[in-house]
Length: 187
Image 1 (cartoon, helix red, strand yellow):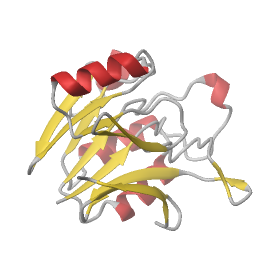
Image 2 (spheres, rainbow, N blue to C red):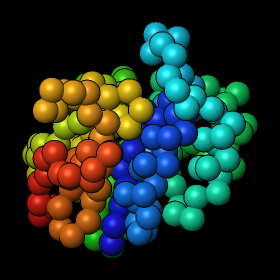
Image 3 (tube, helix red, strand yellow):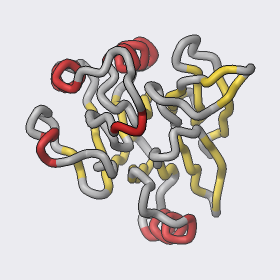
Image 4 (cartoon, rainbow, N blue to C red):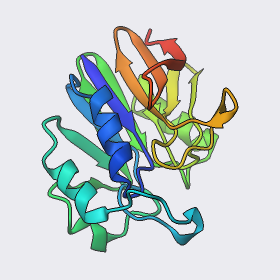
């Protein structure tokens, strides 16, 4: 089992291409929202193409589940063949129960409560553009960061990241190199 985890793509096509090179052998991709829309506060970003990214997502050879982000307006959803789950996406893959929510309106306490109610092994959020992975009350909280507008400073530069769940680990990896930034064992 191999699961790609991504969030906050914000319509940037080159970031998607790089992520798909890391997710090529994935069984599933989980997207924690903010798929297409590129808010003005992000400034001009080369590769911004919402129709192009929608086409790439629609033609993905890997199944994708998407949770609604705060920038995912219904008008953009018309471009996607896949539904955007709102506000949560749920997946049961092998023996793992996974909850995905963008995280913009989720307190840590609410996340813990929901993770417990759903007996989630992994709870995925995005929104902050900062990758994080920690175990809280037995549940792994994974934020893959952003492949298009990263806020992680790693080795002196802003580093785009995504997540991978495979080989008994949940990890955050650098988008450009695939090198592990941080990880936790699944069990």
